[in-house]
Length: 442
Image 1 (tube, rainbow, N blue to C red):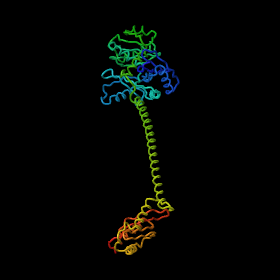
Image 2 (spheres, helix red, strand yellow; image 1 turned 90 degrees about the vertical axis):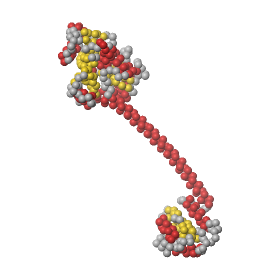
Image 3 (cartoon, rainbow, N blue to C red; image 1 turned 30 degrees about the vertical axis):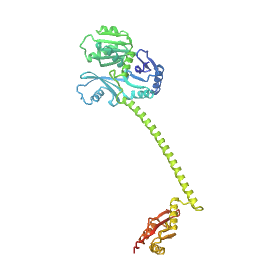
Image 4 (tube, rainbow, N blue to C red; image 1 turned 90 degrees about the horizontal axis):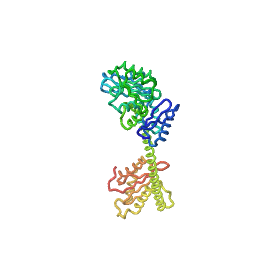
């Protein structure tokens, strides 16, 4: 079965899969929910042709509402909306509940067709969830009528009768386009009555209208039509579903046919499905990206942690080697820097000649500069001609900074103190500087 020619004709009991040149394949779906029915359609279609995935959904006549409307006084802007609300006036339903299509058969008249959106949408969504593409939704009888009429446009009849499944569809045609539609049982009296009603509502100029008839036989109809002056063209070559399947193949491949209800909210189901699919793909991609990014950052963090641990161990090993037997401080680099400064003071900083004033004068200046309002504890005080080194403890870094400021006021040249917070409170400080020739500030 060619993929492009598959018609899914909906019926009361069985649905049928039909392709041009092939007999109809019934799919029993009685009493099944749309999802189960769509699954059976998919399964049967795969048995017929594993490559087939696209179907034209053919709707039965009793799913479609139809009525001709006047269009002469409708505005050109948003004309389709105006036509929809004009159609609403003739139908027992609100426009918001309908998906409609229009076929204009004269400058001031159009044939309006509509389906209830909520009747078709669940079936459409179920078919899509089953993995089938549904590019077109059309009345099955209108597909057959279009295929028959366009097969020979020059001989378009005034009326076309289609008979199948014990039902008859009578279409009034104007210039080869539908201008009226009557659905009735496949009974000669009912069909003739539909023709009489239409000719009363819209009289014909000819007393011998042309009438084409395709599909099943109807007892007594042919003789009565001839007796009432109809020019009858009886086509027994193909049945209605075969004509419809031919139109469905063209409908899927192009924009053939008079109407396609795959629009409005019935087109939105396809967009919603695509949106949901894109949303799922986006969510999966975002999750994968988040996992990959988290893994990368976690791995990098582990590497940084390992490098930091190795550096700390090297510093601790160096301190233990230089000062065996001493506890390892919290900040090894700061302690090593303090020891280096202290050792440089003990060595005289390169053997410079003793400057003037002497170390005792420098010590006196240090003592005189001590701030009386700050509580301090000096644990190490070293004074040389070129170096002043003070170690001790204070309550805060600000106190240590106050001591350094006082020393500068007393004629010392020193940098800001280096401090280390103690676990029990307070800070250790180290102030390194040198005597200055500057006079003390009184």
